[in-house]
Image 1: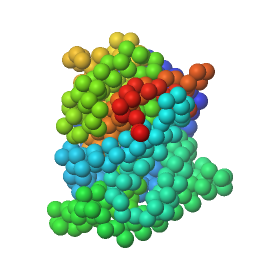
Image 2: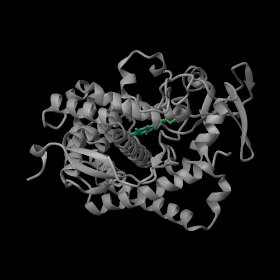
Image 3: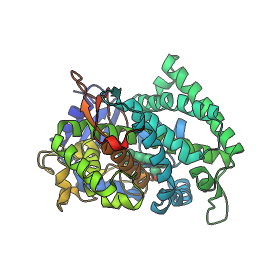
Image 4: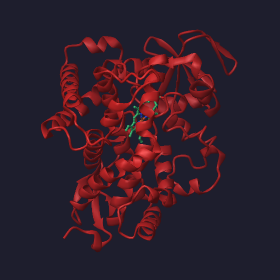
Length: 425
Ligand code: HEM
């Protein structure tokens, strides 16, 4: 059993071996921590003793100085500059765009149609992120270029995270496509930044006008690095979570019924506004339960000074890893851990507290896009579920495929009409 061949089985086996387990990944020793308390220590309590580990370092070729891969003072400065654009109060501005595009997608479906839900959702999330970022400003050709390059880069980033640096220099098509796509994406984003008029409310406008405590704006290159981080962070994971939510709902018809009832009662056929999102508790349960079951597989940090964890002193430079995915399915923490039970979120279960539930991580590098993602996921689920009931396509076996958040290999689903009053005329 190995990390590359069967990551879930490998990581789960570590959880059975102890609170801190030393393994070799390739030539490197890595310490895995397997309890929520130790993960919290690494991410939050002792965050000052760690920098980003090897996985994110391997992604620096794409994100460069952006917050995804920046550390220390640069990260702190950039985080402060960017935080306001992702504050809950700003999300209201993005909700109109999210609604518009989710509605257009679900409105184009036809009763009885069998569609590749995962592909529709990737397309939707890409449209939402480019529209909230640049408003209506950039030329369609520029947006098309972004859409063409991003999936190639996401694939390259995933491969590089898993493989040693020597892989980067191999003259194989994957590397050539990755390098070419990275160059194209950077060039087009710099062009968009240079020509951006914006509406004053889009993400790029907010980031352009942000100033640090000495009144300095971000450089053009820094803006570009941050936009690439947001685009890559903000598409695949959200699309995968909505895809998994509908996959799970198709296996649990009573949950789909309860979701439909809540949406009909609260929204009555309207698109959700910002305030509605707090009035959809069962929808929020479904999102949390999907995030619990389909979390990032692996995260890492590296000690910048000797640290003591679970009675073991780790020297400077030690790589420490953990798996939110396996933690969230640990039978020591959760009843029937592999089952989709949104109702578990109705109760005050301590295993669901913020220290044990880490789909967006925690500490200084916690996902900056959590509120954005939660709004986007809720709106997409509510928009689809108000009109349609999605059923698993007969004969399709869904498997998890390695990605930042594991994704379904393919998700064909059959669309059944729920409400005739919401279908386009
Ligand atoms: C379900 C959806 C999402 C999940 C599960 C997710 C998960 C995460 C996680 C686990 C991290 C921290 C990585 C670490 O600790 O090393 C992170 C960071 C980040 N995420 Fe997300 N994310 C999601 C959606 C988004 C969205 C929608 C955006 C942007 C609109 C976004 C932008 C970012 C950025 C820029 C960072 C880097 C933050 C930093 O290092 O300071 N993410 N995300």
